[in-house]
Length: 393
Image (cartoon, rainbow, N blue to C red; front, side, top):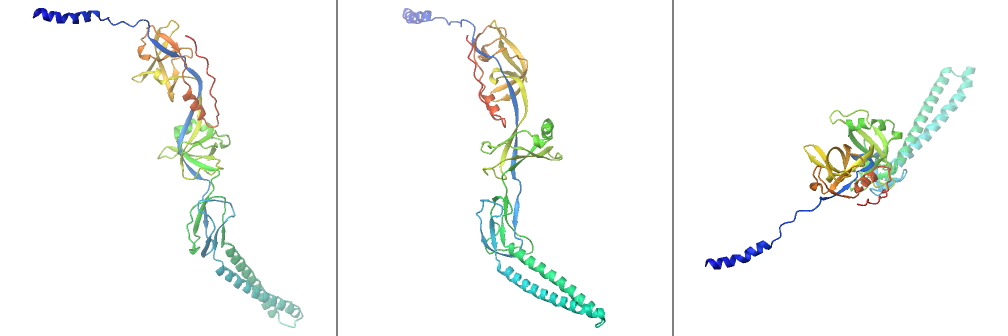
C-alpha cells in the first residue's frame, strides 16, 4: 500500500519540478511624459441672469366706450401705428354733433353782440344813448366770446374722444394677450388696460454680481461706452448670435444680499429672446499670460498638497511639489513649481519612484479643453493651433 501511494505521488512531483519560476520584469518601467502647454489662459465668468424688455407699454382705453372689434393677433409683432382695437363711435359722434350745433348758436350770439356794440358806440359818444347801454353791450360781447371759446373746446374734446375710439399701437414690439373682449365696456372711471406691448430689439439681461466680483472688474465698468463684450447663453445651452454691451450699473450694493445689479443690452433682431427668460451672461474678466497647463491625472494630491513626477535627461524620475490654480476641463493651470521645459509623467504615474529609472515615451498634451475655453470667450474667434510633430524616442 505504501508503495502504491508513492507511485501516485511521483507524477505530481515531476510536474512540480517542471514549473518555471516567475520571471522578474526586466528594465525600467515605461511611462509617458510631456512638456506642459504654455498658453495665455482667459478667465471667463458666467452669471445667471433674466431677460427684460426695454419697455412694457400698456395700451389703455382713453375714452368710455364699448369694444367693437379686436384687430390684432395675440403674441404677434406689431409696428407703431398699427390698429389694435376699434371702439363704438356712435355715442361720441352724437355728442360731437350736439356740441357743433351749440357752437353755431354761440357764434351767432357773438355776432349779435358785436353788432350791438358797433351800433351803440357812436350813439354813446354823441350822447344819444346812455353810456350804461354801451357798457352792457360790451359785457354781453365778452360773455359771448367766452362762451364761444368754451364751445370750441367742447368740439375739440369730442373730436379727440372720437379719435380715441381707433386704438393704435404706440410703439413697435411684441403684443401680449388681449385683456378685454368684444363687447366689454372700457374707460369707465379710469383708463382700462387692454393689452401690453414689449419692444424686444434690443433686449436687456439683468444680473447681480457679488461685491468682490464688481471690485475686481470695476475698472471695466466705469464707462459703458467702452464696456467689454458680453455673450448671452440661453437655457438650452445655445449662445445668442449677437454680443451685448454694458447698459447700466446700479448706484448701490444691496446690503441684504451683498450684490450689485447690472444690466447688459443685447441686439435681438430675430426676436428669439423674449422677456422673462432665464439665461447666463458670459464675460472675459482677465487673462493669465504664459500659463503652464498639465493634465489633472498627472497631479497627485495629498492633504491639500500637489505633486508631480518629472523625468530628467538621464531618465530618472524626480518627485516635485507644485502649486495648482484654475481647472480647465481635464487640464490644470500650474501657478508655481514647474518650468515649461520640464517633462512630467502623465501616464504610468504609479510605476514611478523618486530617483528611480524610467523609460520615457514623449507624447503631446491634448489642448482640446483649452481650445473650447478660448472659443467661449465673447467676441473671440479661435482656430486650433497647428500641432507640432511628436518627438522621436
